[in-house]
Length: 602
Ligand code: ADP
Ligand code: ZN
Image (cartoon, rainbow, N blue to C red; front, side, top):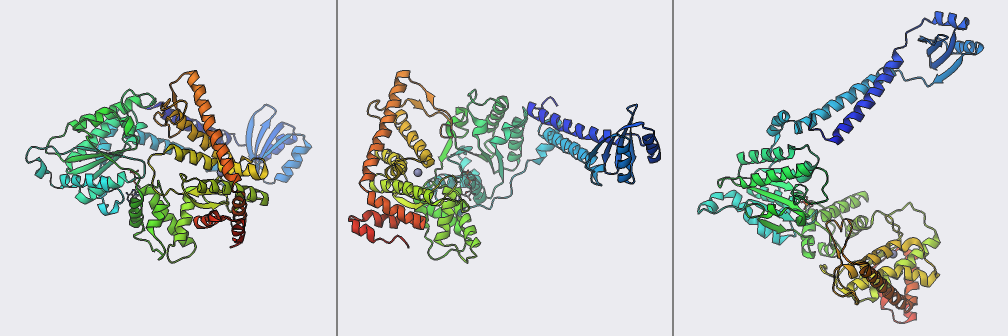
């Protein structure tokens, strides 16, 4: 019991308290001594009753000596008039249901049972005696049916890992000459890129058992449990070799020891990590157990994990490129019925940054979308709608938007789009809509021509100008702003800030990085400052300069295209959405007359 963490004790105490409360209130009610009705009436007539609590037919009676009794009134009406006549204080409560008599004890028993169950569960993970039971429970997952054919779009990683299958299948071939089979493989890459899938595919291809555990499971545990779990896991794995141990989210236990920012569970984590290291070192050469770990934070791992003999093979798994996305889409559409017009190439082009998991989700949503319309096959339009839903949130069809709001939104989005179209560095417009989605009143979607991995200064400036385009258009047309642009401004300021302080792209400050994007910066962590107050002011000045500059240029761009702006907005108000082709047609008009000839209504 000493292993109970504070949190669990707290939960336990709260449960006990609530249970006790319910129990005693039920007890208290039941405990009043019974009083015959006739005696009660007698006492009432004698004026000995001072107070009556009525709950339907059942009365809790208090007499002048403050004694309390309980009685049953066959006719409430009569009693009431008698009580009133005698001026007795009456309080009434809603009668309890017929089951009330045993609801409370039932609830009590349930609560106690739940608590007992919780205790046992904790103990099985915790107490040393309980642990023996647990050890017996470690079994491999079901034989993996995943093959390499199911993993698409990450050819480099696949090429590096094919060999592993061979190691598992014919280990003696490699160890015959005294060589050592690699023990640990670390798969690193963003979530959803197929790391787990890859590990399962290796197990499936080799036909070996697959033991899995997740690093995050250990964080919440009692001291000592994580470590013994690890030992038990390895012991079992050795018995069933050749096999694979898969450790997901290894960063949860494998953070470098003594690192800050991991307040709770520190000891536990270190013990688990140490156990893992010891186990990895303790293999005999004859035991073919390959440990595959996955993480999206390789930078925080304890260096000891990466030493030779441990996770000395590191394989990067990145979000797939355009060709990869095409292949992944095909894998997930295998069992689906597709219309003739579906081209995975086209879908892949408009889904930059999508991971394997997101593409799988996209295909699934598309299938649901088509099914909702009672179609026989999934068409391009379904995929497009599913994509919009995933990327921009579901359409808020029920939202009431006034005509005026629609018009402002149309100009706002048209502003974004025109600026994007005019800037050679900016990503082309894919679609504009003024249908409210998620929190946005409208959306201008841009799609890069190719996947970008690094951003040029010009691209970033174009991005800022495109973002400012919405607000600038509003200003030009209405000479005032709405709050619709606040997110645009936020993002624009963010980009400018990082250009100056992180990417060294300002004229004045030059190529210096003043902030270290510390761990978790992208997840909303804070930036660490490492500069003087003076520099801070210069940074602010430079950020302002970039924004101001971009704003002026955006203004000039849009002022030169007022006719186009009006036309685009007009069409948007009428049709709600415009696609890339239509935007192109409008933007290619040189003459006013040409522009006017484009029909507003489709
Ligand atoms: P990770 O472990 O990297 O977070 P998963 O392997 O759990 O990602 O991926 C989740 C799901 O996404 C998989 O089960 C699979 O359906 C799909 N998926 C991810 N990557 C790929 C890929 N490269 N090829 C095919 N499907 C993929
Ligand atoms: Zn906007």
